[in-house]
Image (cartoon, rainbow, N blue to C red; front, side):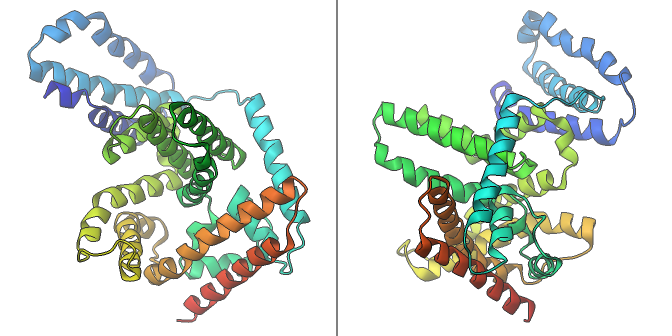
Length: 361
């Protein structure tokens, strides 16, 4: 039992429960609650030898309670006012985001809606989107495509991974790929404003890549709980963010429900188009089962056509992100390629056309 209590899963869940408790039950306590909790949190360290010699249920309970109180302490400490400072990395990322928006705006796309769409997909800047286009994404159940999320980061990760595969699989190559992948996705996270769902995706990537580099088993539950713990330690106030909540709920659905639904499909070739269709539908259903209750509570609405939207749009979105990254990347180094620009523009038009059809159903 003691080993299970000390596992990252148990620690993460207890700390998260503490953050929720501190945020919901103890608002407006100022310095009082953190000041009272700090000496209590020091007690397990001061009496570590006695704690190790205590009966297992007692020591396990104290360990869990300590992380629960640490979560409350973190939540209330994060609520205290602090001076906001912008570091050199943030300034560099902001400058890169402005340069990226400038490159996107300079591309000769035939359609006037392609530039604002790519700005939203690649930088998170939705200021150029028309109200009609925003409403189209909302009414079709595709609003999550406009908000930078783990989906965008996942697609970019696959692009980065494909570009670094030619480096090989030697120990040196694996270390170099690790540096390039984590640096690229980390910089993209900062460049896009480090939204909660993007940070979650970045933590998933860096934890998974670290475990792969160390040739350690990559348990989904362990990666999930490690990312949750790290993100809440870095910023406990993010617990109140809707993006944070939806992102982790969606991943919980993918980890818990998706494997069950995937196994329902009869055994056969993994490249069967019907299997791909089933897996895509299972992925969408898994996410919606966990996120729909929260969306209904917050907005009193439910995307009725979410399954149709995801089946049609997700493959297109993956292709669009790949061509967009290639288009912008070549333009950034002074090698704009018109056929690729035209292809990206055509995919954006196709995306809009599909969403219009879905809205008309």
